[in-house]
Image (tube, rainbow, N blue to C red; front, side):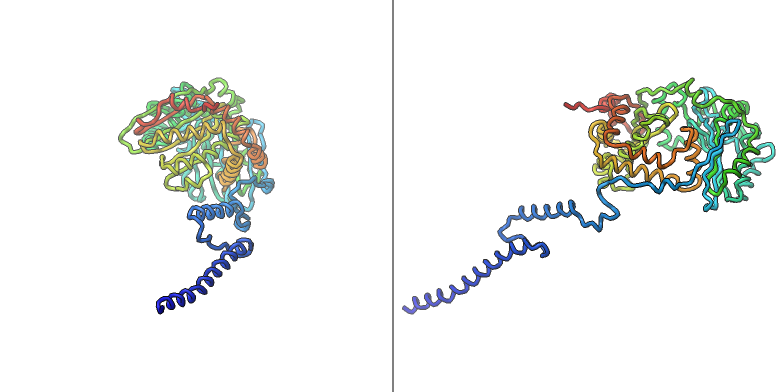
Length: 530
């Protein structure tokens, strides 16, 4: 009896505790929906009866919602969605003034009187393309010899005069153009023009200087052989434009360098350094009237031969040939190759979309990183999978043709994957292009063009190059309008013109046994889509 009495008392004591616990549970569960419906209250933890997968799904949904509707404060200056930008401020850029003299010589200036320095130079529509097989290398040889003394200045006098001004005198030669320019203080512009006019019209070409400079150029050729990127693009031109002037190198073969004489140099000047093919450019702290007056005084001995470079190109045009050149070298650790299609000439309307396509393919370097976060899908593939050391798209224009493609450096075991990525992303431009990618590439292209002309020397170079190629300086407002007119359908049309089922040119060097053969590359210039 006593045991039964104790058990009944224990039951009575436990009943109120269970009811209190149940009431607490019911109150907590009823408060949960109130917390979720309140927009201001912070989200609480999921109920204890929710499965772990439900919790993960809810967290993912909340993150996606934040991405779709982010805080507008963070999007004020940097939105993840590319949009077209206004460039009306470009209309206030300085005017480029151009005057053509009676002998055909053009004088172009862009004044920036706020600057304390100026760049003056001579841009000539002549390069290695206008040489013959026997004289290949003369244009580059002439660039070296032009500073080695004139009738009234020795080589030392030229150097000391430039150094005393605190200036910089330089020159370069390309396949279609040669340039001589000086960057000086604003008060020394007339002196720099006098030096440029003297070396271009009164150079002596002493035989001793020629033989001495011949050894310098031969050493330079040995140094260039060590620059594999230069070698690759020389081989690419040689195979893509074989048996045409564009296929020759700028420096020329060693046998030509050893045989070039004073007569070759003088004949090249008389033939190609003519007034109609030259542009005198000045930018920075200059005035157009002052430069024009000095040019009329100084440049009086130039030939007025009306033959233009375009006429010479028409006589001996360049033809693109689908072909390849491979140089196996197992002594180097990295393989390098370039794949190129025939591009557009300078004056082709599709040259601007090709520039946008180059920006879409982009560039990537292992040292810089960031491949997975870049706009270019090719750079993303290369960066995420680590199949290359570096890669870059290129677009080279000439008077009657061009080259468009990708150059890459990689380890031997990743060549097949890298080749597939390059050809897949390049051929995809013919079929699948998003408006967001095109907009992003257009903005990147416009930014790079503006950054390129930061300084008096880049501005002078831009003026000289455009006058030789287009015959005028294209205003940035017009150029940006052309870039903004490019959309996804334009990219597809231009890609079908230059890439879809077109021959390719390939140049490769290093341990390239793993690089696919030419037919493999040719097959992947199109996609079989049903």
